[in-house]
Image: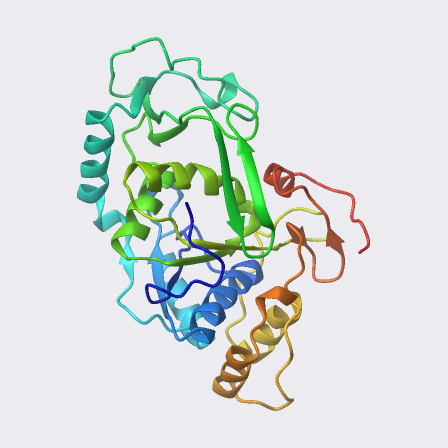
Length: 317
């Protein structure tokens, strides 16, 4: 069960966890700023984690560029930055524990073998693990998962319809995102997660892992992702423009406007701007949408985050 809305016990520890596949863009800044302000408004700590588990996708030097961009915008973490690539032994130990407790099974299926949700093809086949040929999937108990999100309220996922067994180790031997992020959140004692709504679909999967490790899952706040004029999410893969570090105050004001927050007085320094934004942070004012452009809102079902990567016709709000 995830923590209740606004619960600050234990102490608030939040995080921003970018992948080093390229520089931060405006959508990244919105997520970083929201998580930063939420932590600071509740006298919490704000951490940065570099999710560099997938070497082929990493851009050389992107991690340092990301840190430089955050620093230029006054977003300074309260603890040393953690790199997932330096925590492989922790993920391996977690996999071993899951395997010993019967939560995993080998799977030969490829992503092209199913449309959205994995149908459980290998669940009962008792396959033997084969390096390079089988992944490891986590076996979800077939049931409903109900979680509370501070913006979207009570949400329910049904096994086989809106969630399914998921990969925790890939065929190439790399640890998968869902496993790594949960182990990191447990070890870093993350109490609150503020992130884009494109990751809302991951919430029940991660909740299932928190449950088997007998750990409380963090309080959740999924904010709208920034969409381009074509209705697609801004992303590094789609060559979104990198943040311009030359005018961080303007970028922060744009992000506050996107989040529907009160604007600081004109002429404020960057430090004064962030302090004002912290004191006036009101997450309940964030638009209750899965994604929106800076000018036009887009309404999506909270159970269909895949729509965020497909072209959509803008709908006026």
